[in-house]
Length: 427
Image (cartoon, rainbow, N blue to C red; front, side, top):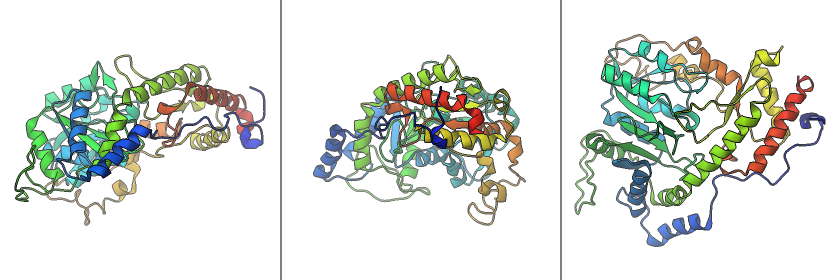
């Protein structure tokens, strides 16, 4: 493609006015939220919007029990509590995720154990899980990163072999499927986020899905101050706390907004899949670009469309990170919505390098119930490091691909071709 790069003064590829902001807020959404204000019931686990949202999400996913929360992180914490995770226990999860995956583990005074990723799917590498299992392991917590389900058959087989509990972090995977089964419904529990950036947005919020009544009851307790909350509203609430608990309830306003958005979730997911498949088809034609891989036995909702570049094919003479940052700047100048979304694996975060914060005095790592020495060596996660050094996300949280017209994707592809046709100028 001819023409100087926009970053060097050339014309911009993507026209103004095509990008649609997220979340889409319709008149129906506004009326749903306004109805809550007019009803004047604004909170409570028995609120009409919260309980209706739970029923509707249960119908959508085919789950027996669904509990609503004020965040996906709260849902994950409640799931770990329900599973009996406590001081000295280990929870195995992916080295590549958002911090909301490991904070709930620490909140239960347990120890996160990280596994490197599969370079094709970006999910945790199931071939590396077994070596991490110890007599302290209690839970396997796969993360369905960017909306693509992890290798659940292998994970469930390992859990069965070692008598472990599987909790799915499906916070980015609303409606994704694995061999025909909905993400978040295959393990003992599955958790979702309703953060404003997600394909299903409530502003904030979360879900816990399970088929197990006992897990549902324990999660209800931690959700509301450790109380034994009945499914039907009690005439007299005794306020007894039976265990430690939090105030993790959702509220009626975000629940109403999420209910309205849920009606359009299949529509948004279909847009994401159309756009994602088109981008993959076209970007794969550019030498040195590697689109995201989707195994044939599952679907993704492309919560984030992450692509990689191959430094060897491109013949880079500069560090991959430097090229990544130059590439991002060039594409941004052309009008492409693009971002990094994490620069290192979770294991490189200061909290895991110092091990002196947590609850203070080194807890939970120094907890006598654990009694083991642990160090998080970032070099043990080379695939996660390599991914973050050689990849970018082709959508931002304000302008994700699951709401955009195909026309915009076509301009994005033109921008990529232009930039990669001028790599010498870029470098």
